[in-house]
Image 1 (cartoon, helix red, strand yellow):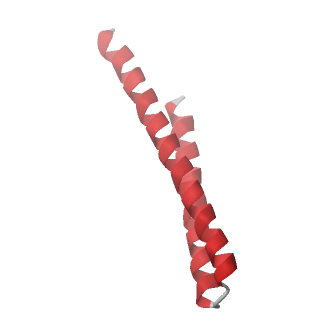
Image 2 (tube, one colour):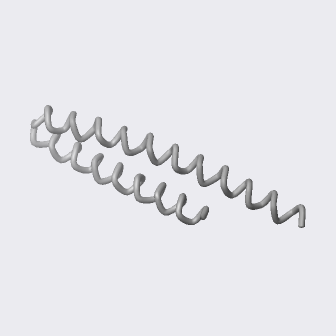
Length: 70
């Protein structure tokens, strides 16, 4: 199951990166309101990616603990 958490975290990281690129493009065109919205969305995705990474790490720790006790 940890692979599922890692994939989810990677997906959120990619979504955040895309939103950051979009924000930069809109800011460059002086469309600050749209750029601001993309920046907000990027931060939201980055936070979700961080949470998913922490969950993946916790699951990996649990799995490692099970294997070391066998």
